[in-house]
Length: 204
Image 1 (tube, rainbow, N blue to C red):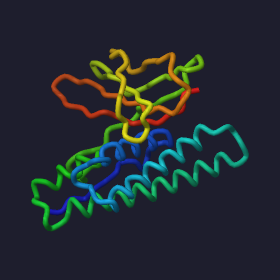
Image 2 (image 1 turned 90 degrees about the horizontal axis):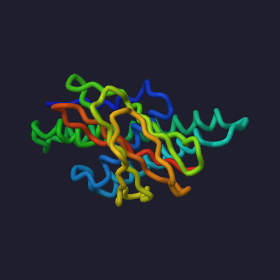
Image 3 (image 1 turned 90 degrees about the vertical axis):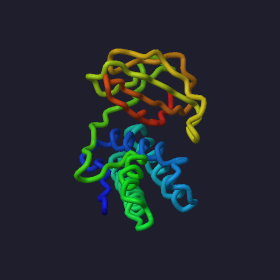
């Protein structure tokens, strides 16, 4: 049995691509199927490329902003393809039992062609109306929305939960003006869901 791994990011806009890439990174750091230094180096490249695109999007307007965004997006796509190829190679290794192939792919947040289809990723972090605040936005139609944040943008430890909401957005005030990682989880009846994120965003 061979599986074909897909990312499902080709039609995403720039902010959504950053969200998707950060999601792959979060799932592949400390992933038991990708423990070698070489594996984690490829994960780290995606993390860096994602951060570069995010910084380009948040940069002040200039004559070079558009071209910088385009270059950063191209680099991120390249590093994501390398990460996808890693997952594809690992999942299709002849030593892997057939019943583990889908498990390995799912553990990364990627998809298997013919088995699953990408969900729309719309989790976003925007500046709030006042200094030291952020606006978190997610997909609607969920029963509830959980939100978390942390100042640890390397290991994502010590996450702080904000108030769970029934609407798909929330604004958080009184934050330190530093880079922070934000997470979102939607709750649906009778269905398990994963955390979205991290989105690393500098509070202003």
